[in-house]
Length: 249
Image (cartoon, rainbow, N blue to C red):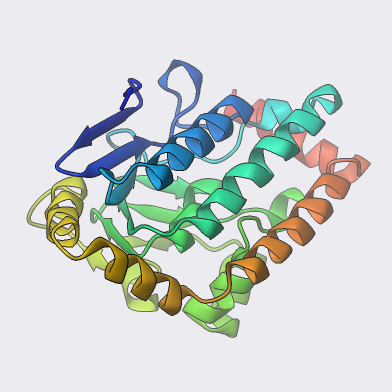
């Protein structure tokens, strides 16, 4: 297996870093495309039995690249790349673990709903400010979040845009374990080693039975992406995105 600098393969576990060009904790279209390719390869390679999604030290992922949201010439490429990665996550058959250290914002948070277990450090925070930007949720989280968190909690999280600290995220079930005595990646790798020793076919089949129909997730992803794309044509949304982009500069 050819390993890129953003990934690491050992002990039957592929660790993928959510980062964009130059090591930024922001995902652009090329980052989505790279992650899709890596997951395709992991799916096809029998040596890969578990995947870990991790972020940069002290910051998991700050979301999508707003500059691409604001450039209509990049929308087609962006939508294709985003849709492809979300669909790959929805159809992935092998165990996937998340390890969060720091902020998980926007898509940096929604990808966690596709992980089977999520480990987080006490300093981690979680926020999905889509509605505040004039956008809608992504990654089928309009379906997954009410199932995982309950409707009222999902509504509060997405529509009010509240920030959850690690303790609250654990209480609500967004994360699986709050790691205070070690770093989250170490805990995730420990779990990955245990999973890698299991019979691969039975593990994969059990995971897919537990997760349910991936076609339903893909249909929801397509609906969300269509609404998301339409929102990027709205003048009020563009003004909000420009204002946030200037504040982040």
